[in-house]
Image (cartoon, rainbow, N blue to C red; front, top):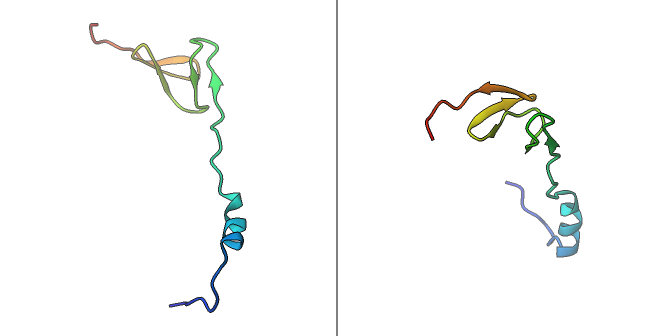
Length: 63
């Protein structure tokens, strides 16, 4: 196995890790329902499943 010959300083280690960042997901708003959701994903509104502004699965359970 590889073994480091010298200690990597905290500064050098952290410089390498500067590119690993958490990014906020890009969200879109449905023009039909007004729900905020991830693009290209199905989403639920009041128990109904929607995709691309159209109802895919209707909630049939009695509330």
